[in-house]
Image (cartoon, rainbow, N blue to C red; front, side):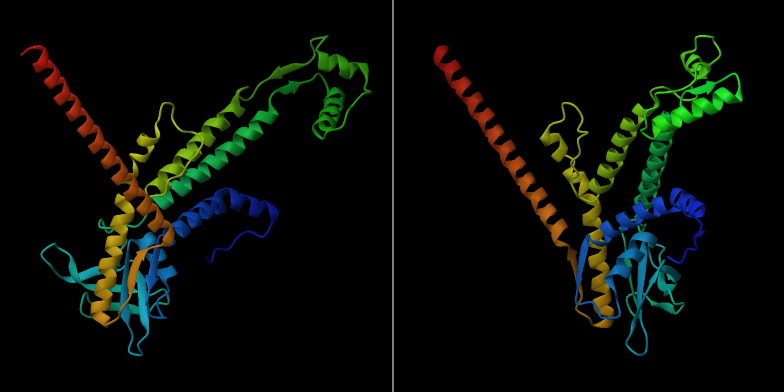
Length: 326
């Protein structure tokens, strides 16, 4: 997005390690959020991609109209001017990305759409992208350190070069079958001339397993907030399917809230500019939401049947008790 990177190999590598990895995760999460909704009957001058990007990154999006009939949308739409009863300014002030102003009285000359009812952007995109990038970096460090231990201390440069040659061939997959006796003695440590020190924890490589599990936890947590069930191999012990599905109700708060705010904003847009646009869940989210409602109905029915069974059991016990003790 307009960034200038060092064209050298070392510069590109440093950029990947420090910037591109996090940018990659953030862009993937933004693509996911962008795919959550479908807009219909929007004017040609309003691109839903940028509408969603502005909402998720800045939290608010203002829409105005030029004299020639072209619409302008701006991120970071701010409210100013006379305050309403809730302390919100009744006028919109903002700029489209080309610098053109988007201003006017909200609900009369322009419209404003919010990402959520808290008027905030999708901050977890930034947080989770950074966390996943850091896990990748940590995994890379662990892999590298697992290969460099131990460090050998040798008596002289001749032995050092001989050991480096042999170790290099072994690491490259070659077999070394002939070497001098002093190198054999040095490797074997018969004369006490070779000392070793572990500069890393010998079980450091095992930490990658925990990093992988944490990675899965972040991914599952991120997408579960958006109503998407992510199945991984790290299900907690003794965790039932019912317990996993029990988080559905919490997961759907956020996407339903986002849909509600977009509908309110599009309704204002239609009212101000006499348009007929609409917004809804995309097919994927619609299917997931239907599956969630079906599970709820099934759970309610199962609970109702269980309660009825318990009631009948209690009534039967009371009848038997009365017959035995007339």
